[in-house]
Image (cartoon, rainbow, N blue to C red; front, side, top):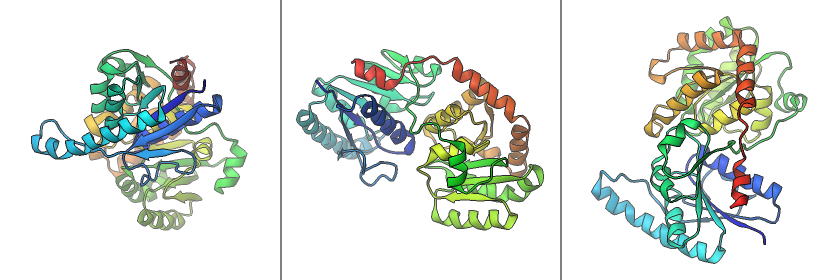
Length: 358
């Protein structure tokens, strides 16, 4: 009998990208599998692929247990979401519920527990989110990306490959599609779904210094906003640097295949893609990430993967940014070898394989 998998997720691209990658893995290897997404605000989320996946929305809200009034007000939204999720679960009758963290998944995971449907969790960051920390004791197992996460969750934890949203692309096709030159150093600047503005500002301030310090280079700039798209166009045109600029990029397989050096945040999704494509980089952790988890991710990339360097945003200056980028580009080959070695040593199961065994 075909399995029915309910995936509950919401929020940033860091949660949605691996959730959708998991769904694609399941459908690719088991075409008869049924997948349903459930979460808050999915239809208004720019990172959710409405054309490929079926989704149902339930209400939810973020809150703090330390603020009783907020808990009382927002708890009503969560309660409403639990009731809606119970109705969806009874109608869909899933074999398994998969949660990807964040408060957007909380109502459906609680509903799964109430309806006696087993659930598993996916935690992509070294420091787990509050929802996964709380619910891990009830999960069949929690899939984790980093070994350091295991001691921070209750119950069974299994180290797995991160569900990637793309496969390796042909480089010649990628260069042609992006309009970039083969043989020229290619920088990718990407601030992620939350923190692009400050990275863009730093890059614009440092652009002239970069031009002086680096060998001839070209830029892929994922800017995150229409305003910065215009600024980026002006900046790189003025310096005569070939460029490919987008507010948001869906063809990350093409982008990562031609990138030599990356400057970006340290979300787990981005880090996993960076490791998969063996791309060295300078990470600038998003300072407002919950429990400062991006800084922990960045330290893992630098000290365990040996894939580059990181820079704390409050300490960042244009001069320091350029110095660190230049240092990395001088030893790109060594960094690539380090990442390749790290990958080879991770003989892990895939998350979708474990799900189909449940």
